[in-house]
Image (tube, rainbow over all chains, first blue to last red; front, top):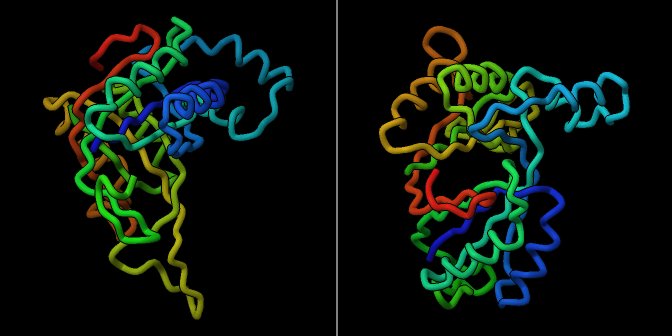
Length: 127
Length: 108
């Protein structure tokens, strides 16, 4: 089993979700996260909007104005069998690629064991 | 590649992130989490708090950079000289593959 962990754009979650369910991977978990990547980002344009008060001061505005400068993203994670990893990765890439920096990252992490809480079934049976 | 998951105090996030940036480990993801540790939370008077707000920092680094990043987090997330209960924990787990979505290329 592997965990496919993708950090994607906020507005791409629905599309990714639909594409995955179409190919038979309905199970996933999604979290709201803030983050930054390798490139330093020029946020001067956003700064103008924040200064002009056009952007809500919600966590988004706050995270952009604080010194650490993090960008809101969605953390999309699902656990699949080893042989499905390549397929899931390509579905996620196809649906999230805009070609611009900031599209996100995908990480594949080994999972030792999975248990279904309802019945106690383990590993493959738990899917 | 290794994934470093550090659970630290929310007030220490700013300093840890800026230190990581100046050491050129800029890529990081931040999650707000709630949890308790070995000390079973904190007890203030009669009230027992066992869901203490913390922040989880998640970063994926090459094997050789691990010690460096761990050292930066350790140094900056500590409170006081010797550290205090509740300063948090760092977990490291293996990452087998990584892809950049914008280019579709494997690797960090």
